[in-house]
Image (cartoon, rainbow, N blue to C red; front, side, top):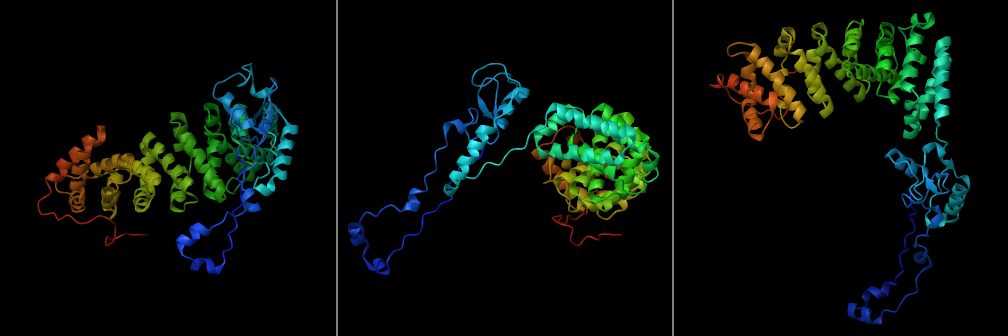
Length: 461
């Protein structure tokens, strides 16, 4: 709640030039009381009338609503009170429901007039609040979306989805109201019905406005329930999402990537199998990582790839063949924390395959990146980096190029420090085994500095 804040400052007092020449002791005795300027008196903040204060927050109301008990509250405060599990009026303790609150326009206008009257004292006018969405309004809007989808009216679906998205983003209350009314279910069902329309099915190689808008609206109402996921995970719907991921506009690609992540992260085997069998999905993920459209889309693509790889060995082989290992290593060089964690998770999963380990061993930056990311990122990054390096060093018998390079880059010392500081579970086991693997190759190996990657040959395509 915004309280009135005075914006006035005292004007600098004009002092004659001769005063500075008077000795300090003389000035202290000779100083006379000065009258208080009018501007200084104006710095006092005006007292807010008590009937303008919310009984819950004790701050000036911006959107006053009146309960059946006759008590007026600020909407955000009283709705927050009810959402925290209370079911009574805070003042009278009588039963109260959110549906019973009525906007108090008279009090709101009085507050606005008072703010205007005290504008000279720095009081800002309270804006007129928008009418919040009611459950009936939400049901009507979502019913219109479903009806338009059944008719195959793509333009109407686009307009209605855009309205639902705008209302959901306008306030958290609207979003919860629409979500409770089944917004995700209605939008995902509309998407599934539209992709079965011949007019749209024949143009899926290009960006399709109605489908783009539905995906963008769907993102606002996460998480998706089982029924909503089944609509998007149908073969026709997944083909449409992948097509948007490849050929859509920037915002549409980001929405498609986030929707795929939402479906994949549910760990639903049927959904993951359907995604793995969708033509072009692996190529689309690779393309999105090569030409990122936003950090959110990049992370979403990595999460989707991780669940696909852990669900199916065929998906891992396909991504390795498409160059995912090399792409991840390049991405890890200067990635932020969140991207680093997700990229390391995918890389560690790809190194379960022999092809993946071969690609990583052949890359000049693979071992340096893993050694560097073992520390100073996060516990999750450490876990995946240690695991990935363990897979590389364990897969090659004898000295092995990966072991020698890891020793040169200081992996042995970092692992010792890691065990001293403390790590748990699988990470501790693999760090200990990795130390044993590296210990046999320590003779004659010189450790080099790995603060950065300067001086390392970096093969860019």
